[in-house]
Amino acid sequence: MKVKNMMPREKSYLLDELALERGHEVIRLPPYHYQYNAIELIWAQVKNEVAKKNNTFKMVDIERLTHEALDSVTIQDWEKCVRHAKSIQSQDYEREVHRDSILEPIILIILPGDSDSSDDDTDNDDD
View (tube, helix red, strand yellow):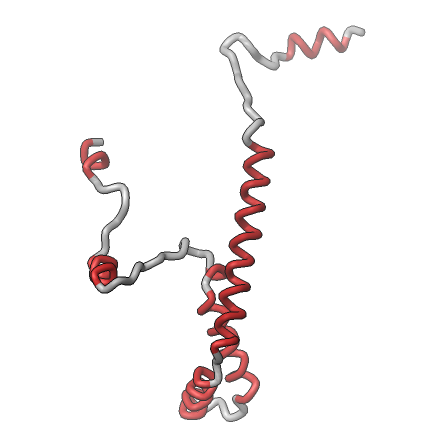
């Protein structure tokens, strides 16, 4: 327990400190939520373009097509993907807030004397 209490609450990374010294802030996305990351949408666009044009299946051609697809990504593509990722984040946040507002009032209190014994059920069976 002592070790756990001594550990810092947040991880500190040297890269974050170096970036901060140069006026940049590193932002980390939650793990396993690729949909919040605009680069994943861009990467899907690149892979789709390569797949459409790839008819030789040779690594040399795939590499060339990948470079061409990456070079064809525009500022507008990035803006669209960032807007989409932000929209998904907002929708998920609203859903989570709504879910919390529904689940929060549900509180179950079980007192030691309470039970659902079969004695209670047998009383109703006699009727």
